[in-house]
Length: 298
Image 1 (cartoon, rainbow, N blue to C red):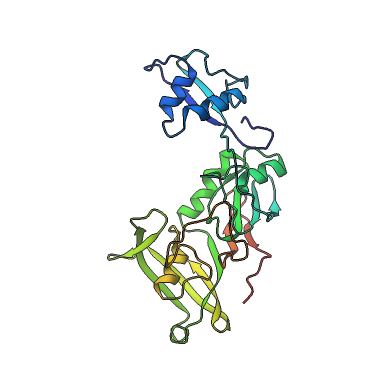
Image 2: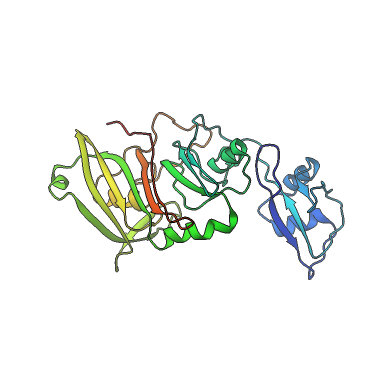
């Protein structure tokens, strides 16, 4: 796997035999219409488009069908996340990282180097690292990575088969009425709303469930223990919002607040922590239990 000096992996693109293009620049412009011509010219000029042997190509080079090329993303300006991740466990099969708030797990949007995946690749030198599950960039806590590509599917299947126990902690509004009902398993059917960032509850058979327990109280806030039985996008945030106790500092629920990407308010992290994770290792049959040393303080 080709990586640059920052530990960032290249993407791969195939040049189809049923296409013709004036040159490589014309192909990339046609293949990726959301990326400007100027951006591709800059990538070629900076040596960010390579052949399979790792040799830099020119924008004017001929289009050669039935080949694979490599290319790197280029970000003129990327927000800096001033918090460090920590490796809490590593062996030849998996790596368990404790992620800070605000740090995305994988590259997307404005984030490339400032992601958990690329920071870990650079820190460990293991370019085959791949996350076997995700948590929101706003959420802190445990993320597990597969070390060997040949084993990744076996670990991912644990999540598909609900064979993983995940425990989260959250700080949200205290509700005297809700306390009378806890602990409770909240169920609902959730799906993407009209805005891709938000999920919403809809009528129909439940497709998500969360065990909600009260841990401690310091009015007007309380700390809750959340054990999801399913793994829907934004499930915990959506469920707590639905029972009128949205998570403290949530910028998506109940009201979607546009991110100020280059001016993030690091003093108000989402009060949600992926605290514990447990499963039976599919490779050696051992019981794996991990806990984040981070704590949410009321």
